[in-house]
Length: 135
Image (cartoon, rainbow, N blue to C red):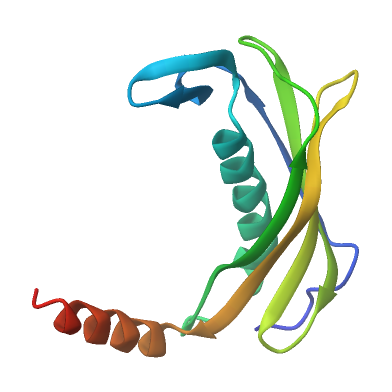
C-alpha cells in the first residue's frame, strides 16, 4: 500500500433509502425498511473508499470479515449517513469501524476488515477455482 493511510482516516457519504433497499426474500418485501444486506453493502462500500486512494496499481482489497449489528430501522425517504474510520492496519489488513446513522439515531455499527493482496495472486486463485468446477 502507498504511504499515508493511518488510524483515524475516515470516509463518509449519505444515501436515501428507497424500495431497492427493502428487506426482500424471493421477490416478496418482508419489511419496507432498509435491509441488513443493504446496510452491510454500504458499510463495505465506505470501508472500500477508505483503502482505494492507498492501493498500489498491482494491489486489490477484498472483504475479509464483517461483524455488525443492525440496531434500528431506516424507512423509505430517510437519509442515512455511512462512515468508515480506519482503526488498525497491518501490511495485509485494514480494519475499520463502520456506522450507519440518521440525524436522530444509529441504524447499525460494527467492524469491517479488508484483506490487501496482489491482483495477480487473486486472478490465479480465481482461475484455479474456475478450473476445478470445469468451466
